[in-house]
Each structure stands twice: as structure tokens, then as C-alpha cells.
Length: 509
Image (cartoon, rainbow, N blue to C red; front, side, top):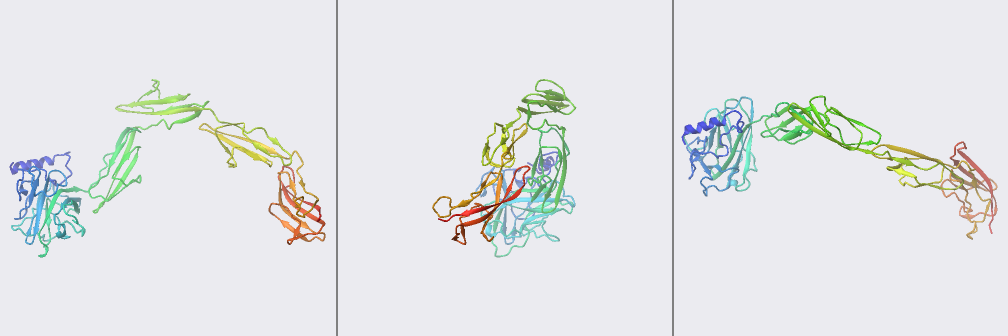
């Protein structure tokens, strides 16, 4: 194939709308060739690539398998190889698909591997972009004068393993008009270095641009739109939704923006996504048996409900699955909703109770249909009561909440404090302790005992409110003592706090 045919192919790459239109390196994967390379030193067989000096760079392709292909290409069938030694340096060069634009940023990348990684000097390998081909009539290093390579690999940890592909690259900001790229060594190698080989594959140069596309209108809420913010050299993505992924799946209308960080600059873009038929019948719903629900859709286009009717609203009166399809021009979308009817919950705690003295009562709900709960957070459904009060509970289901209450009242009977007027603390197991008692609406707060001269010999403000007949650990003599009981009464219309004093005979046998 002649050189003329090669440049015809190059023009094909530049056709508008082609899949590779953004890629500026022609034949970056070394897949295209004029004649299958069957020996070393045949870079000129790789379409678009040329040798800028008098050295002999290699081009290999699996069209002719050879032992010189010491590792599989990073991708595809082809790769290139460069040899470096004292006074000898090989390069790859190619014209770009179009000149670089002044002030624009570009990401350059390639993959490199070596059989002798320990000889690879940091800061030596890179790429130089120039307006004219960079050539020399010798096989020595192409040392750039009046500038330096725009991309230079300065990683000290590069090529730590034999025959392992690693990405090398960086971003550049064009001065404008750069139309050639030369790849290879750009420093003078030290005499003690020794020779080494570098395999090269998948060379790429991409403009650092971000384009989410034009504002978009989708059919309806079931439609989705994938936004792709993949940007050459990107290190960080930040969407207004909080996502940090390169892509975002849009599921609802709105304005979406993304900020992408690259080593050269930060790029941003915004897109608005609308829905032509933006409606929803709502989430599945539960109704009480006597309720109705009106479903509505946009007043545009044509409609078809599950029963074949064609209005833009539908009144629900019974359980079932309701579906509507709306068509407007070439846009058709549908939605559905499931309606469930349930009976309202029921609760009956029973009639109010009137109790006397120390009686107790266990409230057992007569009817409790639904999720039951006492409003004072008592955990048990059945609860035993020994004081007056209003006790309220609720039951609920998906339809409603119902509350009922029950009143327990001890006020119908006299509620008084009872206490013995004598006891015998002689440790015979009979009547050894003085202890008052009362109905459950009375709460004791203290018990005090005084001798005949009014001296306090016993006091307690915590249960059990009882006296064992001792003072300072010694049994009191038989005598008459005064007892004072402080308590509160919790009944409507009765004094809240009162005292009771009584004479107490202590008999010691």
C-alpha cells in the first residue's frame, strides 16, 4: 500500500461524527499497517507512525507472530518497541489528526512495559508536542532545545516488575498549532546505565472537555436518562445529587450539574431533563370502606384506563389494580396504583369500674381489632389496676386510629388509714411489727413514732412503713406511744394530703 493511501485513511478518521473523532492520535494501538511486519526495525509499516532520527524502532503485530513479541499487547494485535543505550535512542513520532488549539487542555496517555525495569531512569521518558516534525540525522538522544517535553514521566516507582503494562501520561495546555508528537527519551543517559527496551501500546491524546449533551425531554416518569461525565484524566467527580460516579442515571425531571477535576483544570456542565407526561397515580393506598379516591392524569393527549374508559380522571370505590395509559403525539407512558379497602379498627375496654378499699381490677379489652397500645406506654395488653384513674388505649390499622378509655373509681367507698392500736414486739412471730394499711388511693409518705414525752424515737419516709418496736437497736419498754402517719389521697373532691395521729400501746411480754 502506498503512502498516498495512508493519508486517504487519515482523512477518513477526520470525517464528522466518526466514533474516533475525538481521539487525536491516529493508529494509537498499532493495529493498522501497510505490510505485515516480519522482522525488526519496521516502524514505517505502522500506518501514520514515522522514525524521527537514524535509529531503528520496532513495530510488531500478531499478523506475523515472532519471539520478539515478548508479552501480549496491552490491547489488540500490535505494539511498538524502543531501544535505549549510550549514544543510541529510538523514538516514535506521528502527526496528530488535527493541530491543538491554543489554551485548550489535553490528556496524553500510553502504556509502557520493559523486560529490564531496573534500568529505566525516572524523568527520562515522555512526549514532546511540536508544530513541526522533530528530526535529527543521528541515532543519538533527541534533546529538546528551547523547551522541554510537555509530558515527562517522573514517577520513581515506575516499572517495578518485568513485562507489566503501566500507564504513563499527563495533561498539557496547548500553545496552539502543535501538530506532531514524538515519544521517547529526552535526557542524556548516564554512561553507567546500560541498555534497556521499552514496549509501547495504546497511545492516546484526548481533549479535556465535558459535555452532558443538550437539554432533554423524556416521555414519563418511568423513562430514565444516563448522563456520562467521563473526562480524560479525571480524578474526581461531584454531581449536585451527591454522587461521585462518572455516570448518573436520571429518574426524575430537574436540573443536573457535575464538576470534574483533572490535573490541568476543573470542568463543569449542566443539563435540564424534563418529562413530557410528568404524572403519577401515587403510591399504593389503603382506604376505609366508606371512602373514595379520585385518580387524575394530565389534561393532554388521549387516555385509556384498565376498564377501557377514556377520561382524564377516575373515581375509585373498591379494591383493585388501576392502570392508565396516556398518549400524546409520539409519547406514550403508563402508571398503575393498587387500592386496598379495609374496615376501620375497633376497640372496647369495657364499662367503668367502681371499687372499694383494697380491691384490684384487671382490664381485659372486650374488643381490640388492630395494633393495640396503652397511651401511657404500659407494655401489657391486660393490666391490673389498684388505684383510681382514667386509662386510655388505642388500636390502629392502615385505615384509621381509634381510642377508648375506662375509668376506675375508688371514691364510692370511704378510703381511710387503718392501723392497730397495740402490738407485741417480742419476736414470738405474732403481731411483732406495727404497720398501717389503707385502700390503694392512699399513698404513704412518712411514719413517725414519739414517746410519752414527745421525743421522736422512729421515723421513715420510704416503704415499708413499719416499726419493729426498737429505739437505737434496743427494744422499747411497754408503754403508750404516739404514732403520726403522713399520706396523700388521690380521689376527686378529697383533700390531697393529710395526717393521722393515734395512740399506740406497746406490750412487751
